[in-house]
Length: 398
Image (cartoon, rainbow, N blue to C red; front, side, top):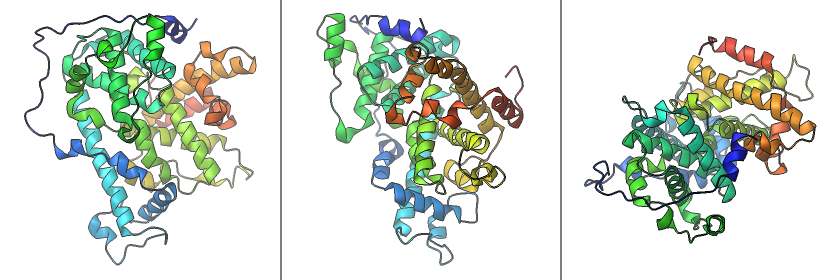
């Protein structure tokens, strides 16, 4: 049985944990949080329609510089808006959201990347187990996948401040899940269904009984609203403005699949959510260049001929096409190849793929357009991985 299967059967063991006089407890900050941390740019983004985002990205790409236009640039008579559906205010608001998310992303990474090694850095198995528990329990509680990504980020923040775990693993996991749930969508907050836990462990479970939410919240501190890779995707995806609706939908499912698949990838911890999301866009464009199945001949197919990293993505992400971007894509390629070599044949042989990969099992459903077994994604093979390796100039021991 797989690691996921074993963890799924594991009963949740919860016990009271006294913090006592722990000198490491972070007290409430005496100063007000920096204005950046109080912002919720993701809420502003929800009010911008998909069509508006596409029109804005099409307009931004026409700007001569490899950067986002400034307010002065946008209000210049020479700045040409590409659609009558948008106005200057729409463009300025969208760019302001990107700038705010970038500041939050930088603040998160500044907290996570510490000079002193933490218990999480030293123990790969601990990291894997904690993320596995988050994935399994969020799935069990029917929580959105965005909560999984946020809770995983809280694990990183917790260890960057504490260095070691002062809570039981299950308390930490459920604490991060609950905190992520409370901060995932404040407009639609509902209490997690603790009755499922109650039926499993035979005791009354409440928010206060399974965790010390304040302790974890104070540890996460100002970075509680950091932008996850999925939140960045809601911005970067619309740089694909040349894609037809059906292909844009494919791209979103493909990116979600890749990002979820690599949530436990220890090698990616040092990279920011912004860079990891950018690499996912780069990777699926790489796949489309090789395996596009449109009706056009290969020599005239626009997706096979198009640049993998056009200017709009340099503008939106802030990253040039470089070896670091390709190195992350190579990690994505290794993960996808592993799944394609094991899970796809197992599925075709009518085996229970849940025993191999929960992510694959999720993304072969109609809800995700069966992206895990879609031809372009499932065709990625060893030869494609070698091409990635050459592009990124990656050595065998890296």
